[in-house]
Image 1 (cartoon, helix red, strand yellow):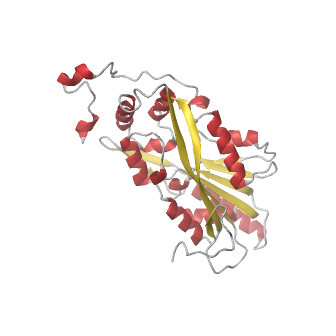
Image 2 (spheres, rainbow, N blue to C red):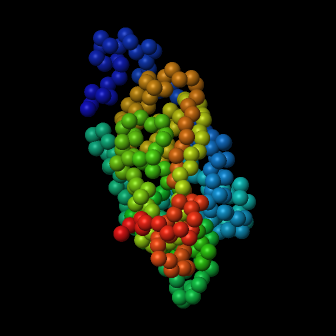
Length: 306
């Protein structure tokens, strides 16, 4: 296994075929606002999709749950002209334990989104006294944050418990088994192993008795190849945080000296994302309320879980 990380400088007789191989990275240093994003066209597409699924209005009180690095919160505040203050919450705090050549993420209990929404839901319930309450939020977005939740079912209930009667939750999730990012092999494998399958997310929301709609969207990405390598080197997207510096170095080198070496100066791909909306249910039906976006809401179908 360790031999797969050896570069073209070893063993020595093979060094002559490296074709300009470099031991050290020669990657530019981008400004954080430019480095930690997939480009303007990608952001424009994300804004349209968020408007499609969340129906965010200027007077809505929004809570954004997602990693600080690459956060869409400032863009949402600007594009939707939000009049109410927006709240940003870190999904959870994770301590990374380093082994020989890998990193093990250890979530810290009672921190992040789990604890925040537990307190908000409790405060909302005490204020309302069992009656319908206005709540603290109208809309909540979970962006690549599901895997950080310690107790998803309880947190989903607390999220909508923190909202008013018309509250709405939007989950944007890049599922590991649906991941289309041009990552190196070890990164794809690690993300897939630690990711929460989208079927589990739907089942958790079903257990909360929410009205749920879901859909898969493809968001186009086109950027300079050197920028993509720089982003991975700095462990972005946030899923890359679980990889050690050694794994990142080896993986970026494999891509830059392998499949990405001769294919022009740009990289182009489709980012496959899962969009899931959940709202409180006020009707009692004989079949589950988990449906694909655009499906006939009155058409019965086989339950998601038994």
